[in-house]
Length: 92
Image 1 (tube, rainbow, N blue to C red):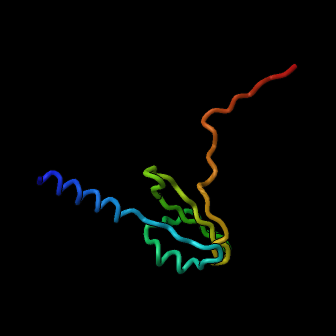
Image 2: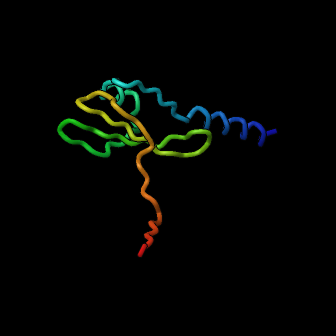
Image 3: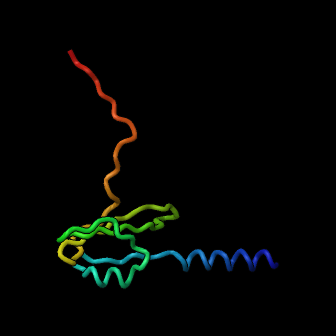
């Protein structure tokens, strides 16, 4: 019985600790940073700022990037992954 209560409590903690990200294009950078404290600043230039967050999607941990231009959200995605192996072929 104690194991069952512990298991149910553990599941409740895990489910409530997951962050649901709800963003809209044009959202202000200030609103984003106030709402998502765990967002990590990745890059900042005069006009562009990029944040990174680790998020769970269907039980799989993934990375999302959020791009702000002049303080407004203009894009979010999973980033661009470089291939592990590049195969070059030589033709005659």
